[in-house]
Amino acid sequence: MKTNKLILLMLNLSIGLSVFAQNIKTIPDLSAVNDSNFWNLNNRELTIETDGAIHLNGKSGDGLLWIKASAFTNGKIELDIKGKDERGKSFVGLAFHGLNDKVYDVVYFRPFNFKNSERKRHSVQYISHPEYTWHKLRREHPEKYENPVLPVPEPTEWFHVSIVVDYPNVKVFVNNSDEPSLTIEQLSSRKKGWIGFWVGNNSEGFFKNLKIISDN
Image (cartoon, rainbow, N blue to C red; front, side):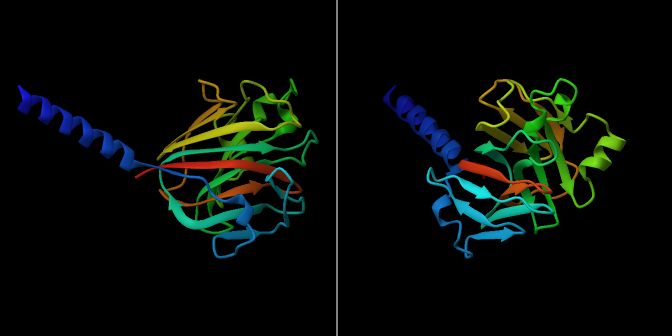
């Protein structure tokens, strides 16, 4: 009887250690974003706010702040994002499975559409650059890769985002909802790459509380 209990205990411990080993949580140090050994800034200027948030300024073209430390494959990425309520000037999100400033997948938000009754279905969007831009996807697959956001955040306030990646499946959750605001299959063949903060053309954005839970 004691032998059986010991075997059961060792089995449970082994399973527990295995699960623990497969989930690696990383909380990047956002206070060190100016260190080019670990971060790579493209087409933007950044500032660190008094609350520790990262601000990427607005200018022409897309902007990215990559984490260079390691490549993300599958798992969950969490962060807080804030944009603004100005149409066409607030595209804010997170890039993943990136190779460089031209090749990456993105989940991004249009806060100015959150409470717009006519355009709320264009609130959260998936794209895969360089081939699958938002206008190509909207033209060829209308409303398949974009959706309303539920629950609806205030357009000028912080909102929490969880992006669950299990290649090729991606689910996007907002403000700790049990139901995803967007569920898609990735269009790229890349299964790993960098993670980075992303802002679109003429857009600025704020980011904080980044947490990465990798399945390895």
